[in-house]
Image (cartoon, rainbow, N blue to C red; front, side, top):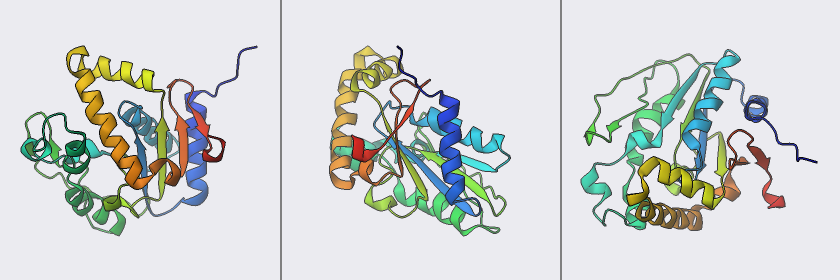
Length: 222
């Protein structure tokens, strides 16, 4: 007999139900974390759409839109794991122009993207405001590192089998560079997981190996 697997829409609905059970009003911050190619951005998009389907106002952001300039990102070497972990992201900018004003509410305006990776330039800020009740859904790696501790109301750690993530990385970045990039990303996440233990601190763990049938995993059963 085939093993039953939840549909993606059911997992999204159950996750939103859980969040709303704890945070129905106010400026709510939700982080979708996980290793490279675990499906973070697509999962975050679908989660935001589920909130919107129910009539809630959402904002979407990605940590990849808050990168440091290339000169700073690659100062330890193009494929340095430590460089990726310690130098890739402008956490001070992320907090200053997005998280802090978003959480203030009221008339405080916030920015959901600050950097253009393709052109390697800072973006002209596009400030936006919102009502008192907004759900901000952010995807990115390293979301529970020390610089960002305490900014999230709810965090999701996405798991996916290593071979599945490797195939996704090859499809995304090409066979030529995928092996070197994979070593960079995996090494950086080993540093992160050693320092921050994000899987243990996440509110929810979801196995996203099969994106059409993700499933909730509980840490004490792993």
